[in-house]
Image (cartoon, rainbow, N blue to C red; front, side, top):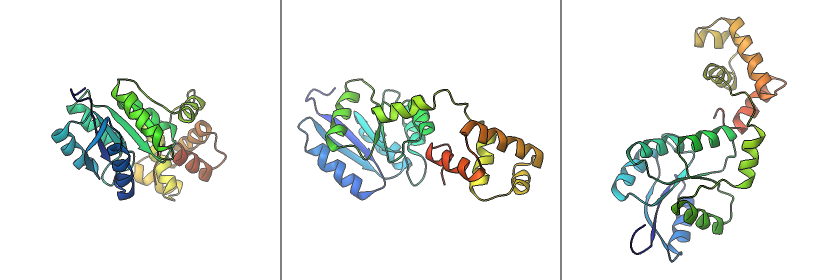
Length: 209
């Protein structure tokens, strides 16, 4: 911590309203200062190098890459970086990926502003933070079989409206293999048909449209 005890905060988000709201909130705190803002992943890494903030607020969805990938880039160069993921989404797969990749906190954008400043202080103090509703979501899917990389590829093709024959051609596998993958996908997701499988996968953050 700096001698003056001010926590330097960096905001990465591509929505101007979020930037304005966060800037007003942070700069209103006696122990915090917003030192930089970025609106995409590449700029986030550049600005982080320049400012090396105490805590980074990272939007999950950025125009050029996911916030998790932007965070991974930062952590490769600065392993001690403290990053809080901010998102509108509760998908358990993305949460698990973010936490495994080194996120110190995960917050929904629907939280009250007072919660955000509390979490910034907690993370700055070396603690982690996951809201109870997100922890419950993680626990609910903890024992689920994860989809394989190939199953996710097949699912993404289904989401784009491709038929089994199209998927087989695109992925250079047989139509029979596609059918086997789809059966496994539906079993693992507890889906009754292809449409429901896609809907569940989007909600859980397995695929994005």
